[in-house]
Length: 211
Image 1 (cartoon, rainbow, N blue to C red):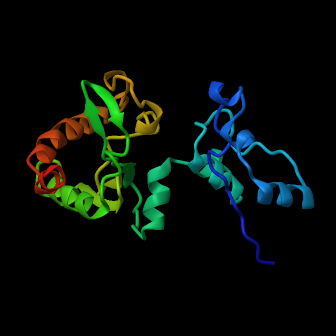
Image 2: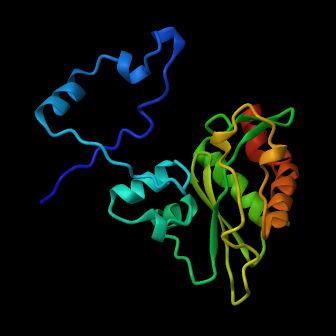
């Protein structure tokens, strides 16, 4: 049997004072959603284990029938699979988001919804710089969402499950210093992040966008 699985990711939102303590969903006029709910069966399920971060990657994996406790290793490997990027044993995939930092704070976790065609140019500049070598490979995605793959090539990865990074969308408006990568290999990631500033500052793609 075929069916459509509609996931209103993030639609619940939070209560807003200007809406009388209601959430935007509670305040919205949603007759079609009401019709679906009244004509179907309503239940409750928890798709995000308490030991994992509450995110769409974890929740969606669970909804599709895969235990995130067993299979989840982050967003990047899932996005790599979606792009047809093959990962070999020992390879690591991490999200390589384009962001805007102002006065040390996360000003925009989307870099102002950076255009995909310009983002691809930035990733090419990174690959040609010291930020790219036989191990580091950059793959452009959509807008600010890109991937960085560490290719093992027979060498042991500098990372482990104890390597921790923070999603930029979780720290909007906050000082980024306290949320930089930690754990094994984190100094490599921090180095790439810092070096990318110089690359992006001189990038033709950024000059085009600011002109």
